[in-house]
Image (cartoon, rainbow, N blue to C red):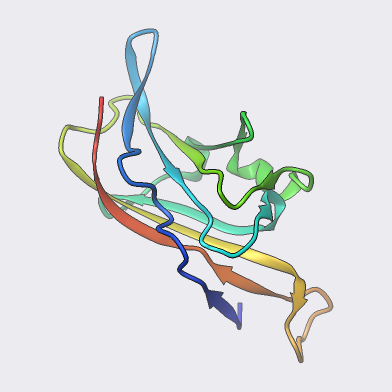
Amino acid sequence: MAFSMKLPFVDVVCDESLKNTYVNGEKLGYEFQIRLSNYRGHYLSCIEEFVVTVDGKEVNSDDITFELNEKEFTLRQLPSLISEFWNLIDPATIRVFAPSGLTEGEHHIDVKMMLRIPYMAVPGRKTEREYAVLDSCGSKTLQVRD
């Protein structure tokens, strides 16, 4: 990736969105919400890279799901979601499978999200399909809610 842009319009990690998730009364993980930091929406297939780090430890991508438009997807599905559009004002919910959830207190959430801009080819590119990338990364320290 030779070229990327950063347009910090909004905080990517949403305030007061971190909470433990329970299924049948059992704590199975946690979730938080993110937003696009851009001037327009994107198709989910344009997410080039998505990494979540919590308290300095990278979360296994197989333990993450991405919920948008009332549908839940694995990260492996994202490249094929050519018709799932992420509207600019809609937050996405990121769910992490972690059987003990998070302990009470503050936790630092870091999201690395790089978005391919399919209408902006990189001038002088070496490959036929090299496009500009938007850095839509963000981080925030949040208090976990139960």
